[in-house]
Length: 176
Image 1 (cartoon, rainbow, N blue to C red):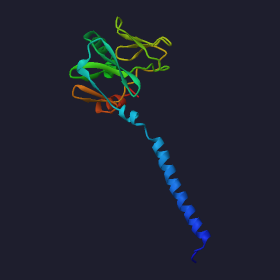
Image 2 (image 1 turned 135 degrees about the vertical axis):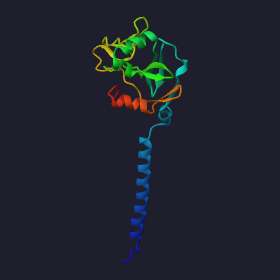
Image 3 (image 1 turned 90 degrees about the vertical axis):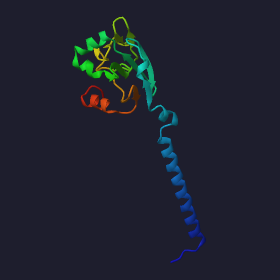
Image 4 (image 1 turned 60 degrees about the vertical axis):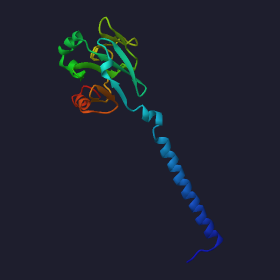
């Protein structure tokens, strides 16, 4: 049953064109789902932890979000040791303790301000307060600051890569 007619040829040609068009459409859809190169480049941020000073809050940027980095002073560390949950939230690198967290209030996403005199954070939107380890001191925030995925690499902290220290925090319910 050979179909050598003009109608058979047109059917095969139309089928081939439709097949190529379908493959091209699927390729274009997949390409639109991939993250942009600028997003891929912003995936990891490396912080040199030796440059931070005690009791000076620095705001870094990771994936478009503010990251609060606060090197704990001896007084802050002493206060954090009173509550085991507070000390578990701190990241220890080369003998120094740091609070590293996403600088957004967990209530509605406002950016709290650091108050160096009282060593805490105050959210102006609804009055929420966080201590120097990022735990809630005054509601309405439902939980402490979120801790971004990180990996310790010597004296550097790599944000965006889940290392064993962050995984332990997540497993213990310290961060989401």
